[in-house]
Image (cartoon, rainbow, N blue to C red):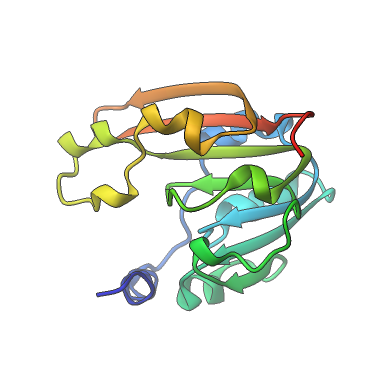
Length: 179
């Protein structure tokens, strides 16, 4: 089953919107205002919450699932897209939200404007002990930070094991010197 079919099926089965990410709420004040890409945003709760904090955030929810986007808040723009084939020009976004998603083909620095920020939180390779069935291609290896966040300054980084899942939270900014 491909990702689009799998996620459409998952969203059809859900009766409520997901919870807003607690770390996003904690660090939102550090994110650059402007155009925000909610990458693999699904039901859109994180982007909608961010937009509710300031009208200076303009959210674009990009997800592979039509079903998730149909159920996302109407006040955010919605684009059906595979994250590996983003249709946006380089340096289009002031902030990227990347929550519970990882695709090594996404070039965050290329998508961000000067001083643009990213809030990144996803499951790590250590999460295998809790979810051995989770697709290993979508687990983040913290050893990849220098490669995945090339051209970005890490402002905050922490790996958390909460007894149910293991995830990393990273807040980064596109370095001033980046082209």
